[in-house]
Length: 219
Image 1: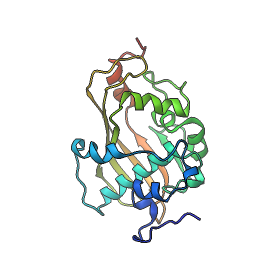
Image 2 (image 1 turned 45 degrees about the vertical axis):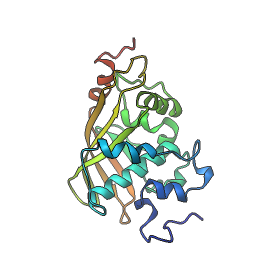
Image 3 (image 1 turned 135 degrees about the horizontal axis):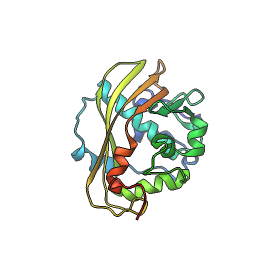
Image 4 (image 1 turned 90 degrees about the vertical axis):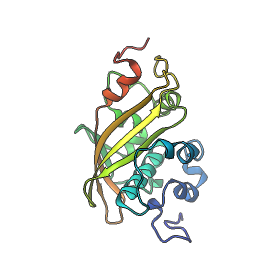
């Protein structure tokens, strides 16, 4: 059985950050091997706009969402997702249709979290949708909490997502610019701070349009 805490720390595993979750996972949990977050340790600190005190609500929210993103991106079986109550979890963007854990696995997290955008389309598989953004942002596509507006069990927070456009995006050539998007999310959490429900609010067209010059048709 997978331990939910480490011997050195009584904090629940899902609140210890991505490195602890990676260390506690079984090799077979990963789609294609454990992910590598070395750029988040070496590049991201110099590019982020906020600094959160260890143990603060902002730091905790940022960490749990990072673990969530890692698990839905790299673990194929929701039963191994420790950041959420996977049999109850659901998410949506901008008041649209809800997606549960099974749909995230089937459709892919990017396809669900971007939704229907003329600058993206919905033809990509789980794997190809991730490759699109790994190609466009080879030096990392980072995320940070800017401000937490309310405490558990309903946690509202503002965030920033960014990366340097250095690789091709759907036929559009990179220009080396920093691409940013900003949004707000509202999360319902359990008593032990696992995610139960997350709603995201942001404009995907404003983000993706930066890489296409505002034109939805690839050159």
